[in-house]
Length: 449
Image (cartoon, rainbow, N blue to C red; front, top):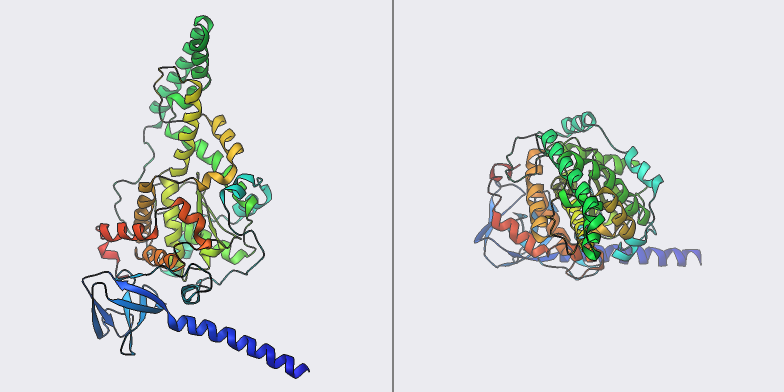
């Protein structure tokens, strides 16, 4: 009886392994997107050319080696092309298709353990999640210094490179005069509002009082004041994300993403933020960037990544959002709208800041669901562009983001693992098209790394 059971178990395991191998051999369909593509015998430009493929030719991806995809050719041969020379077709929209077998479980730092954790951080779950102070403290305990990041870079041969980025946000160099003028304007507005409200009738008096109450949001703040609010709001949001999905219980993984992230963050225009990174225990493929330098990626996304460079590519996109204050601006606009409703009949000119108390109230009402707010499409394209710049500055190849987006596409256009990301981002095809259109204009020198 025991032998019979053993044989049944062995047969089941054999079938499962065979299924994975068959899926991997079946590969993932793709299409050539360049006018002509040379297929090389090995993953190297110096390798002999096996064949040349024309635009729109159909191919089959059966493996990956760095920034090269391995193809199964019609004549039974195999060969290699660069990841940006073909476009992988959207997958079968399930987690058990050929793409999943081809790309999953290959993280360069070890695959995370599968658990029964929260799956699918939709808007309602993020809104309802409580702030988890213990998890936030744990996340902050994994934070590394710039010296630790520099040491990791030296060990891994990540060489810093100077790469210009004209549209990158840079904090104001003249904080003092800006802050003085804004502070004076707010004080004047509060005084004016108080004086007017005492003798203006009805709704006009109410509008003046509202303008006085929300003078921070109306006049705006200096960069120093905005930075202070970023530093206050970021932990409030990150703590609520962690209330919905805790950190993966693996110190090595958390340390790894902090080393990579901190190194790349040191290549941005805001290296002095308290940059903090974490992998959360959720099976979806997604990432979150809160103001002030708090970045979280899901276990599902982490497990899709095969190398430090691919981890850097994901973090580079999120760094772009933080540097450009994208999610902070979402909160600012929402709160200006709230202030605007109270001063609807006033003629006060609204500026670019927000009241810190209003922002905190907004987070209390909406929780971490703020992270599911769709950003302006250009903000996402800009974050992809920023990722390429930061990768090049950090000693990586800018094409690493391209291969990550291709892997995501292989999951499927309506994959439940991608639901949150598709809700908040442009389609992967459009993001890849934007990268193709830009042609990595100022980054050609770094594409052969």
